[in-house]
Length: 83
Image 1 (cartoon, rainbow, N blue to C red):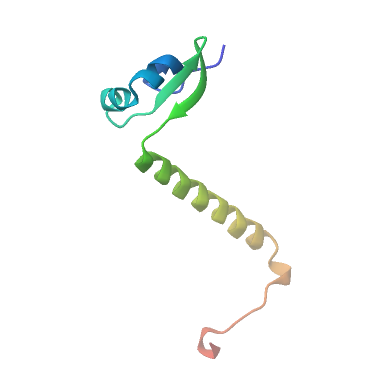
Image 2: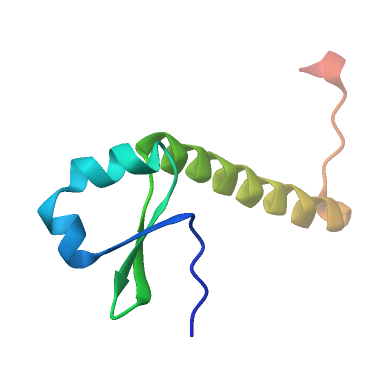
């Protein structure tokens, strides 16, 4: 059985009946949407989703930096005074 990674959960039927009520009850927390008692989706507040996208973007940029730092042989030296 898959782990539910949220403090709140609801069935798809509950979500269809009253989504606003679920969001209010969760008070900004993620809601696991269950189908036959297995998580099929997570409903997260827009603010949380935007934060996650920022974190993911930062992580991807850090991977680019680390890859470039690992291959300094192709780096071009630049003097800041020449810029």
